[in-house]
Image 1 (cartoon, rainbow, N blue to C red):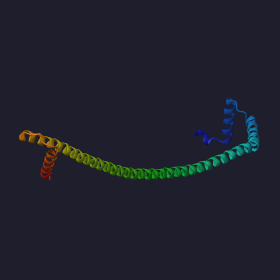
Image 2: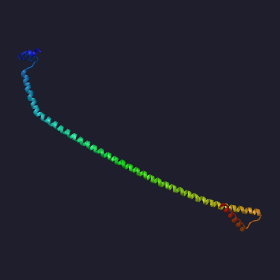
Image 3: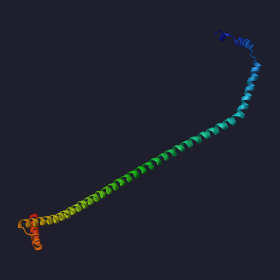
Image 4: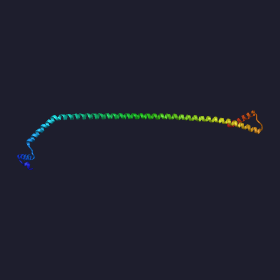
Length: 183
């Protein structure tokens, strides 16, 4: 606080004392300030233009990169929309193909069921026909055996050999009686 009350001459003397103690030279200081100003003016005039040019080029490059990034984002969004559209169409086509396949499978199953039913009916019809034929064949054999048994029994009971006419008459009577009992 003492320094504030001292006259200006005392302040300058004190600064000279401090400057001589620290090695401060006022003429050198002024020369260095002038050299600094000349050098900084030279650097500013000749060095700032290339720096400004480089900075401007970088700014343009960054702007172009940003524009390209926006363009790429838009293209990516368009590609994503296209991809989703293609996936949706493929999904719809797959559903249609599945529905057609199920419809075709149903038709094939129905056709095969009809064919199996027809084959089963044919098998039943053939089995019935075969059963009727076997029954008729067995009836013919049975009639022959019964006729032969009747003739043998009659021969034994009557004690004589029957003629062919007697055998034919007995066979026809026996067959009539068998048919009457079957019906």
